[in-house]
Amino acid sequence: MALLDEDRLFPTDGRSRDLARELYLGIKDLPILSPHGHTDPRWFAEDQAFPDPAQLIVTPDHYVFRMLCSQGVSLADLGVPRVDGGWTEADGRKIWRLFAQHYHLLRGTPSRLWLDHSFQHVFGIDRRLSADTADWYYDHIAECLARPDYRPRALFERFGIEAIATTEAATDDLRWHGMIRESGWQGRVITAYRPDAVVDPEIAGFAGNVALMGQQTGFDTATWAGYLDAHRARRAFFIAHGATSSDHGHPNARTEDLAQADAAALFAKALRGACTAEEADAFRGQMLTEMARMSLEDGLVLQIHPGSRRNHSDEVMAMFGRDKGFDIPGRTDYVTALRPLLNAVGMRADLTVILFTLDETSYARELAPLAGVYPCLRLGPPWWFHDSAEGMRRFREMTTETAGFYNTVGFNDDTRAFCSIPARHDVARRVDCSWLATLVATGRLAEDEAPELAQELTYGLAKRAYKL
Image (cartoon, rainbow, N blue to C red):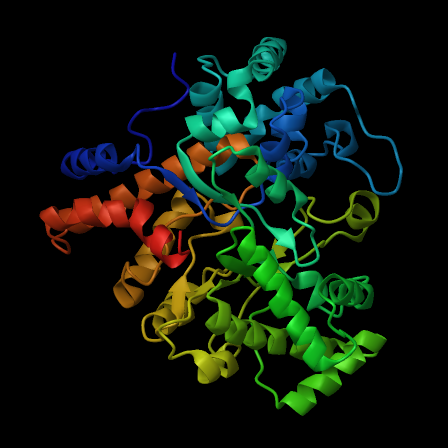
């Protein structure tokens, strides 16, 4: 018995469902563009077999283990590595059994849909995961992973991925990207410039990171001018390794456009570790505007995804470190926060700034009106907690009337979970086709326009916005 309903996520009324299905069949096999993600470039460089099923599917996926954690399952028992040197389970089969025993907790969630899609379409499984089927699942997936056709490059090609972007820190040496290029493999794996650790004075090691960037580039990063030149040099290095975008994960969307002398003074305080919280926030805001100006020089697309209150649990941060499921959305202002950047460069049609949000209340009130008038702005797809069927539907409902479709950028999967990439794109394609069918059925879109829009939402918008 198939794990998935063939008409999942389509409308319930007959006419709309038939139209959604027809639209979906026209785009379901289009190539996947994954321009914003966090897969490991080392996978594609070395092309070694993935480890056991637990290490591939459970241990690295915070969507999965945060739900189990909420029901009292220890992260250590799920094999999540500890930074404090403490014990974690290393037996993949034990981890998998624990995961399977609690699989019911994911009912109705995006993770359940993604996992069942992976089990059915990637591993050919037709029975539900449970405590009773845990060992069969483990053995079957382990057997698959040992085969050459389940290595990273083979799956990349099987998934129909045209391009995938990984995300590296500004000081990364990009060795794995170099190794991919030297291998002669034709899969397009590109990087993205993520400078958070050298633009955020509140990140541990900020001054040392800035000094390292100076060593890498030969510029004097103890000076404001040298620091900016070092960014330009590192961006050029990333562009040489395929980058088409930069990526900025700030606590909020604040931007500033200070006089250069004032910015230099603030930078000097940041290097000394003397910034107040307000000054650190102002410096991050200034650097978003500086990055936008650099994008006008070198063409990188600027992505801003603010609003995550990182590492909410001090205990989990101390034991397991960052990115362990305890990043929580917060309220985010865009209208006031982005005004300095938009007054500086917002009318430039040769600049692309893609805005993400974890605050859905901002869609209709702020983001859609902003993107619906400023030439530089585009709206990124629903992200993180809202990367779901209902989140995608809400996004379309609250942004289309004001921003239209062409001020959005299609879909990106933003994931470390490689096997879930086709599943995530399939959800987006089904939801978008359902929304288009609803517009046609309610007389808001001509039926002959819907197939073209389906192609754009699936492929064209992302390809143009990210310059792929």
